[in-house]
Picture 1: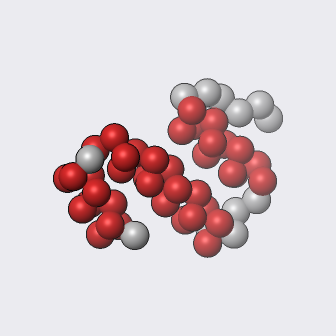
Picture 2: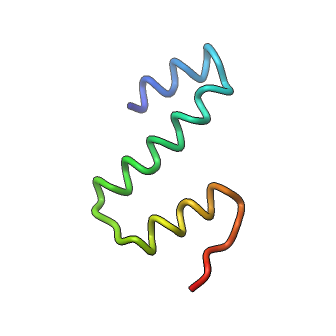
Length: 52
């Protein structure tokens, strides 16, 4: 996935941003994180804070 991201970033930087978000959540799911961690990651990517 990282190789693909690098190749796409060189071709179209805007489209690579969406793929980076997908890659981020893929890693979280593979890491078996809980719902709170998923929400915190989503909030961080959106530039917000997650309520505790």
